[in-house]
Length: 206
Image 1 (cartoon, rainbow, N blue to C red):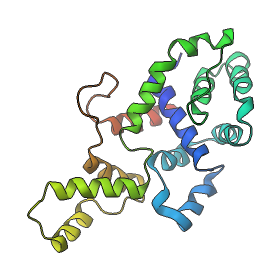
Image 2 (cartoon, rainbow, N blue to C red; image 1 turned 90 degrees about the vertical axis):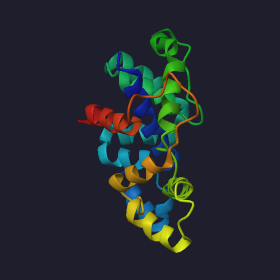
Image 3 (spheres, one colour; image 1 turned 60 degrees about the horizontal axis):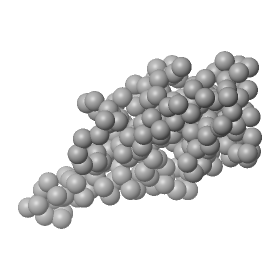
């Protein structure tokens, strides 16, 4: 069975591509032209790594969500693709679709763990829009510099954080946002969760 984090991140990418009505590489370019501030990190990451199969799964989630359980069964039982099958079930909007079938028993056993891992990724702002992450980063940046004038603050913020319109800029802004929930959480990742996310994507998609 694939790792819980791997399933969780793949499910997040599939779900966000579906939520944003992306069906191909052109979809992201269209969004940058008409509503760049609405693009989220997970969607950009999906467009960097998705294959033809991944886009087919997004299309299934978008146009035929009632057929997801059957498709997951085929992926798991006939094509021996447990990662795609399990992530597909979790990617169904709004809260995933759990199957009661016997073949899906391994997925049910760790359903709550995968959901918790997905929430941990979400706490890192990967599903928030460019605009929202920028505002969060700006508020945090300003709070750390109470004596800075508005004019000086704007110049400093643009130099240090910039406009997150690609993965590198997004990571810089995200690091200023400090989106960790308060207290300790067993599902939070060690060191930098975003780095863990990107590394996991790289491992899965090559």
